[in-house]
Image (cartoon, rainbow, N blue to C red; front, side, top):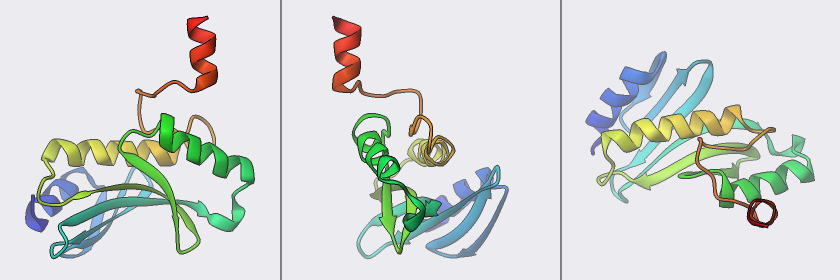
Length: 136
């Protein structure tokens, strides 16, 4: 993958997109996204803001941490610059088109499900409590 291919894919799925090579802002179904790349260090991230960190309750923060282990597949809830983000981070060159499309879907889902299921999609790993309930 490179910036040109990545931009082409993002442009196809975004409702609107703006920016320069390696830094794009775009929207998908009213969710604001950013995509940032660093060719020198072979990194790429697709992120979407969720909330100001100061507005989060302790319960929400705990749920985010649990979700990072159980219900967010390739994304993570993360705080930077006092904002809670849904973030997909990956080496740039090794990315495939399928992974980018999947990343967009997972970040989108991570934003939409914050406060409810805290999920990046349909697959999740069972918590200890769920395992006890299902297997006992």
